[in-house]
Amino acid sequence: MLNKKSVFILSLGVTLGISIGICSSVLAEKNKPAPIADTESLPFEDLRTFTEIFGRIKRDYVEPVTDKKLLEDAIRGMLTGLDPHSAYLVAEEYQELKEGTMGQFGGLGIEVTMENGFVKVVTPIDDTPAQRAGVKTGDLIVRLDDKPVKGMALSDAVKLMRGEPGSKILLTIVREGAEAPLKITLVRDVVKVKSVKSRILEKNYGYVRISSFQSGTGESLKDALATLKKDNGGNLKGLILDLRNNPGGVLNAAVEVSDAFLKSGLIVYTEGRIENSEMRFNAAPDDLIDGAPMVVLINAGSASASEIVAGALQDQKRAVIMGEKSFGKGSVQTILPTSNGAAVKLTTARYYTPSGRSIQAEGIEPDIALENLKLESLDKAEFKPVKEADLSHHLENAKEVVGGQSAADKAKEALDKKDYALYEALTLLKGISIVNK
Image: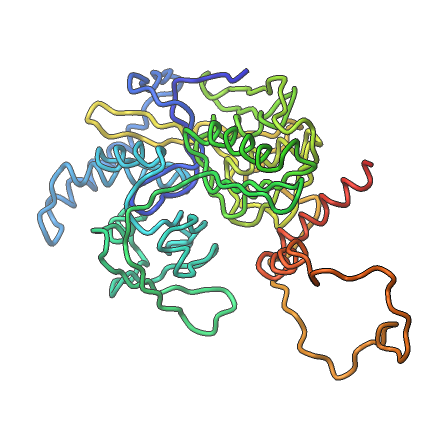
């Protein structure tokens, strides 16, 4: 059963329009940081240096600076100096973060982090301005309109990217393999994230796409699986779970998604220095697709909660993991509200797969590696192989050919060109089904 905790656990990055985490559990406003044991004396010399520098800035800086700004910036620097995911959230950012986990927020629809002073795209979110404009995982944003990003705090860059729906912003992007920086104009919009989409690929084989893990993703998945069974007229012979470019989300949602396909065993556990950071989540005895074979698609944009699901299903031998090595976000952040209405996002633990693997900076290695390829048909060849049907006076097939190419064949042909990885996953599932017979 799920082990609910009264903490709000988060992971990587900031989503445009809000500061959103990638791995969160249940939020309780009353949760306060535990008092720190006095295990060592205060570093008086360092504190003296801090107050000396504080005083010099107040006295000598070219422009007047308020005490509030200096202290707030000091707190931000103290947290961002720890790791890329710890941060100080002012009241506005904290409120936007809470709203974002419910699945609707304003902005461009990009999950971002900082790398070498630039804003790096972790992933564009499905059906958002960024995804529609062609922003890709790994892109480095170097300018926002006419302002260089280098030297900016991530929160300041995010504020520039926010704006009124319908307003435009010009992103200058450096992309690996591109000869020159790309300039992409995006129109801001209210981003409504539908975290679960599904469809029947062909008879007996279903497809579920999870774009992010929100508080309602677990229930949405159950509804999607029930609809797939209904549309299929019975149980599925195989399912593809697509977690590509999924930056993560609510931890409990990742646990619920994993639990939907597992009958028993450990899903994920976390370890840290404080008591509340140690959690274990186990599967309940139900498999919503009755043990049907599964393929999970991942890529470099699959992070945090996505890696929890992929790692659990891989370790439990429940699914074949196919695609690229995942992002490698294996730390847990806890949101600790402060007395002034702000909050501290602090890394408090690492999470581990059932077999004890830490994903931090390593990622999930797919069982079947698959590069990000696009399949294209060859033009008409100068020489085509001769077949029986090409020979003069060949015998006709005794059975009449009716209707030419079937709709299923046409759909399959379209799939291999539109999404090669999905095509390969479906082919693998059909192979498993044949062997199981």
